[in-house]
Length: 107
Length: 415
Image (cartoon, rainbow over all chains, first blue to last red):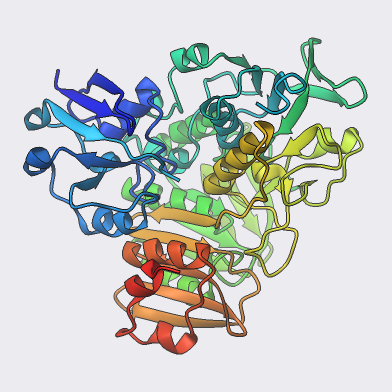
């Protein structure tokens, strides 16, 4: 099963097996990770599942849709070029080994 | 930590979004005492918004609905008491009595009791096939009825009724919505947005009857078979969804002698008149700097979760007034509605964007004050709206109407 590594803002690392078709956000919630809030439950409505993706892996991800791009302008920690909303990162085989960093706060 | 000795046991009544978030935030803030989270439903705490969306449609299962796995509650030392209602609060003794006879003591008690469906006093309301859509059990029952349904009638054209209608239409079920007032979502959106949504739903095949009252529900063999309207019409149906809003669960507080008035009355720090009892979420009536009229009671995940964070902060010795900007959302088929701020009491609406194409924002004003912004399939505006309103910045009506006015710059300006 593909794996994703989640880094907290203070450097703690957790690696999870994420089933294909499950989002990076859902996997984090199911594990009870602290750094992702996902207040809207994964509808791309709230911008509280913000992550920073390791730069060289951006090309492995599903393309960003307009709604996600727009909501990233409303994140608590300002967006960077490698920002994504993890509810939109649905696991594919290519994403195995993905590393995401969670911001200090989501709200 | 301040008061760690005096504040060693927090009991939370209600394991919805507010109650769950409070428990989680207490631990995140370093609270080391006991946390008891009491819920009257049997499941682990779960997310409600997907019930009327991806869960009802069948897109996601129960596993993805849960707030956290069971292990989270053990790891965080959150004692979950599930499937039990609270019968009584004893403020003098600082205990709560559970319906099963157990008594729990508290140092601080938080009421996160939420709200319940408003049930209309209609003849036939008890018939099989009359469904609701607020908790998991209701959604399961509705899902089953929807699968077999031939004709659905929805009573009430609010968020829930319309979200249900969109899913029913996606399954090609005929849907007729009965609304007492003259427009959809009349309590929360401007007339322009109501008109847009009604039109869009009609285009997908939803039928509406406005300004009409339901007289009774008729049935055969215990099952609902038709809805009789007070204009004399009788609509054949095998599924009736009641979505006419909710009432706050304030009875426990009232019985304990706390003030209630459309919710449990709390101050700007979400504290009741009893210094050992707070209230948050759908059940709380509170003063908001974002509201034209006060107090307000809001039915929203954002409000419940942010109020939980506010109370958690106070309980670990960092009190502050609750000032989070309210925001709301609804998904109805292709329609995405996002609202920032509280627009109740608006007098004027300025539309920005392409209303005809259904990608626009409605800026709602009282006098010159911008109260809130409804964004329809326009998420960028919503992201900026939240920043603008949270910062207390105004956008004039002329600026709102002017597409060359840079909303991003206004929202992200420093100072």
